[in-house]
Length: 381
View 1 (spheres, rainbow, N blue to C red):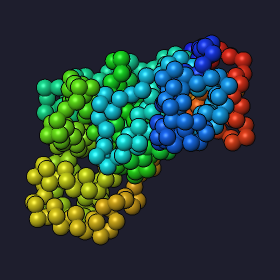
View 2: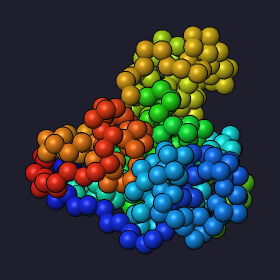
View 3: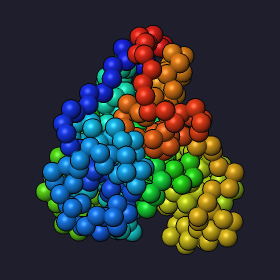
């Protein structure tokens, strides 16, 4: 993957006498606060807050509101921001998430989209190469995508970087949105995936493969118009089946496994394919390598050894090549994470949370919200 850096330009700001209302609402949802709760913090009436979110607040309130919502005051002087709707994408573990957690996740995603737009204006990113396999079943689609991406049947490398190399914008979900494990959506022809970071690396790889499945299998599903519960379950099953086949191709797994494999071989296979032991066991059962009885016995043994909720001896967390390239390049030009965050109107810790922790910053050194002179950036190969 080649990322080319371009010229730094400042994000345009509004010159209106009032703060941008859409950003007040987004920042409130990002913090998981109700209108009543924020009104109490600001010592105003709920009606006054409603006016803030529809007509804008006085500019003199910027500092107070920013402090309450953990953003920079400049966040409210930027252009209007479109809030991502939960019906625009596919949310993993959505049933366990409360309305406020979903609101925080979609607000974080909206900021993440702005971050990637900021990056795309300064760096030439890989073009989108995510085909539409809407008429394929999950097994066929997984094989077709591997062929399209030139991956054959062997274990996949770093899945975040593989997705990025084909134009998928992958970000992490910062604190406050942990109940939503992952979600994906298309915006203006560009695929985005957001991943929680509290899971093991193996489970995170499966979540990303699951979301890739949504992107290639369900791009024509009118998510913004809503779908019934039965169809929603079918879509989730298809994405799970795609992820399993994409990470563990049938031909390869058959070649590397014997009949009725026991736990030692299952653990070898999970390390080989970089997936969880439970996902490996289920895939072996799905392709006929395990009887139902042996599948259950292996699951019991794996649970007793801690593999139901964790992944002892697992792989390290995967990281983004895009963010590594971007922030290394910026550091080389003496542009801090704090300056990037200030350009977006957010605080450095929010930027850190959206980038798998790769936007590192010093607590004292990145507090400034003013911009340094804009240097020209070099090409990174």
